Length: 394
Image (cartoon, rainbow, N blue to C red; front, side, top):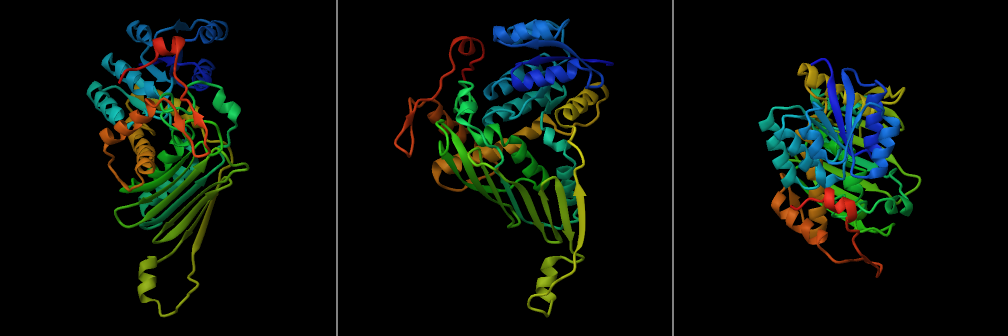
């Protein structure tokens, strides 16, 4: 295949950006063949700005028309697995926006269908193209920092106003997004966490609903996790703080790494710290370390990088940087955090998807959400054209 005919399903903010990148020729071996959106105003925009591109109102018509080889799904989160499975059944390649879905049970099914279909399935984890995170992962996989002891990420530079949350009826709802900051802003961070360190084995979390905004879901979360080897992790995030912080810190048995302000700083020990602890005859030694710094000189290739990677995979069979089936890992961390917060207890991984879904549906079906401050926010329900064309009955 010389050219991948790409169709973009959902041309909201992200879908529009992806469509424009492809139309501008920024993706090698890919052309924008079609776009799809239920909203008339977005289809009108496409008619004006994307000449020669086919325009559809119903994604099923696009999939059945034979006009695309692959689709990029940029719809509300609950629809990602539904549309992806429809594409898999037609042997159409899929690149999904994050998150892969809102619950691991549906994503497990999606992954099974992807494997059965044999098509290329990718996810838009564009932060995997960041050279700092990629280098830290490489060092961990090579064992240069030893065995993981502690991981900590404070990622609070996701500030949003109430105006942002009011901009769409699906935002910040259990039905529309499947959660708050963990499901909307942090899928990239949760993915990078497990991409660098591997998956923990259990999670304890607190997710604060409507702490800073009049919304139905969490706008602040703290996650504590443990690994099979006894290592620990702490993940802190919010959309309520300004100015925010973005600092990742990792301690291994042979050194330490920090990513902050566009710089990766690694300090390496020439011995395992556990050996030093047992054998050193000094109470508090200042042990020599070798420091390596890597500064990010420019922006990562980001969305365009993932699009080019996906295009190569479809055309040549090369491995993906961000395979779609890996989307379940970061989602599992978010789902486990919610379940822990709802139950007030540890949640073991791999996650019991049926248990989580049952608890999620209780919140999706609630008539109102009682808040700690004495307010009651009624969930925003999808309606009108959205309800008729996009809504999914689970």
